[in-house]
Amino acid sequence: LIKPIGYWAYPACILMGVLAGYLNGLILTRIKIPSFIATLGTGGILTSLAYLVSPRPVNLSPDSYQVVDTVVNGSLLGVSNVLYIGLAVFLLFFAILRFTSTGRNIFYIGSNIKMSWMSGINITRTRNIAFMLSGLGAALVGITMSSIRYGGDPVVGTAYVLNSIAAVVVGGTALTGGTGGVVNTLFGAIFMSMLDNGMNVVGIDQYLQQAILGIMVIIGVTLTFDRTKTPIVK
Image (cartoon, rainbow, N blue to C red; front, side, top):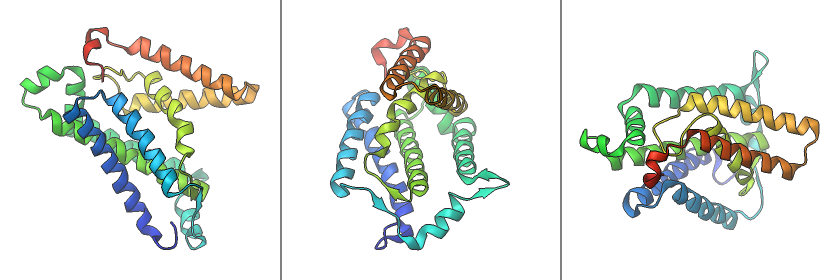
C-alpha cells in the first residue's frame, strides 16, 4: 500500500500471482518442462525481478495502518484475524477441489493423465487453472504477510520455500500426483509448525533445523512416491 498505488496494490498483487501461475502452466503444457522445475525456475526469476523493482523493504503508507490493523492484525473473540483469513482461504480451495468439476479433474489428471485425456478432460486447460489457483494462493499469502509486517520485502518468501514443500509432502501429497488435498496439507502445516516451534524451544541451531526439514521432505516423498509413475513425475 504505497501512497501512489493505495489499495489497488491488493488486486495488482492478486493479478500478478494469477499471471505467474498461468506462465508456469504455459511452460508445463507448451514446453513440456516438469512442473517442479518450471516453478523453481520462474520463482527464481520473479524473486530477482522483485528485488530489482524494490531492492529494499517497502513500508506501508501510514494512512493504511488503521485498515490493516482492523482487517488483518486485529482479533475477533480473542482469536487473531489471520486465523480467520487462513480458514477462509482453506475453505475456498477445499470447495474448489471437492465440489467443482475442475477440482476433480485435477485429481484425475494426477492419477492417470492418459485415461483423463481419453475421458475427454481438457488437460491443458485444467493444468493452467491449477497453476493459476496456486498463484492466487501465493498472492493471498503475500498480501497477508505484508500486512502483518506493515510492508513488503522482495526476498522474505524464500525463507518459507522448504517449509512449504515439507508441509505438503508430510501431509501426504504425492509429487507424482493423484493423492493429497488441502486437508492433508493443513495437517502437514500444523505438524511442521509444531516441529518448528519445538526445535526453537529446545534451542536447536537454525542451520540444523534446515537439515531436519530436508530430512522430513525426503521421508515424506519416499512414503508417498508412486514409482510406477517415475517416467512422468511432475
